[in-house]
Length: 437
Image (cartoon, rainbow, N blue to C red; front, side, top):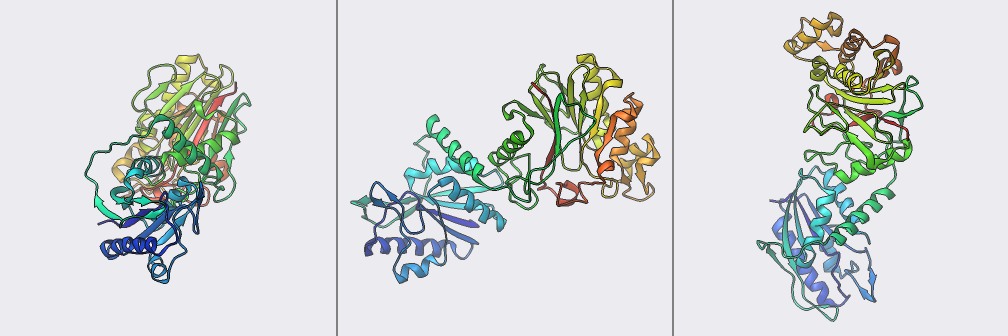
């Protein structure tokens, strides 16, 4: 049984005569009868709260008789001239109630169009079921009652490439119009990295993601989260504008929590936790939400890299694997490589089972606190610095932002996302770098 029911009256035309209201009343009563007991959200989507003029004809009107008005009060009405704005508003209301099973009652001729919008604005977290809302119009009047039938037929209508592009543009235009949430976009930079590079580490402020654990500058989308790709792309577009890089030449790691490094220009692996490049104008990025986003820069050879270092990647040596790629591929020297450890969880908030913590204790006992406890506290940042210094990176060429800025992603919910703190539906920040063109 659906948790939410959406009736699409967006493109239907009604007049204010009594028979139209009777048809509408009959339809809404049928929906209420079948779904009100189970559904937690009943919604009508239409063009405008009063009327929407198109070619001299009136679309769906909510200015109704007393009987119809009484039924309408049991439905939430979302009215907007833009389909993108209407569906995004409905998505927010569904997310506020943490619902995922949605029935959409839609005129058959609009189903393919509506599905195309839904595919862009929702993820696989949501389960959609569609029912036909059949309406026959004659001279602007409803000819017969709206009949709801379950659609088992194969879709006949297809969205053309031109229509798909128009849908994407409408969504992009709407998302660009949304205000930033939770404050201004903030980029943390390091004085160690030369001006020949663009670089930085993001925080959680200044984006449009509204779901609490993803709000507001989430930079990663997946089928398991409620933030769709288009929202993340809009956040990234805003970052590119603020930092000055081209989002069309943006690449981020495909995390495997291991130590593989993609050397840009070679065949891209299916997964990797490091990237290196010497191509100008290409921005590379490492994800982080407690794991460390690490940025590498060599101003002499003009090469750079990023790495994602969680506790597994740290022990597997992903940081030095990225350093070795810089040396092997671009002739970099150890003494020239700058390494900046971006915001991550600190030992104050990060624990591992004792068996997993042994690797850090064997590396250096100072990387583990309360080692004799079942779940010792682990300092992945100290371990990363130790491995970098043992690998030949100069201590003065390593900056630890957590230490310098006194931050921990888990301890600062106002500034950073955190898997440890927020659970599975966590947001993601990044560390990024590029060589200026």
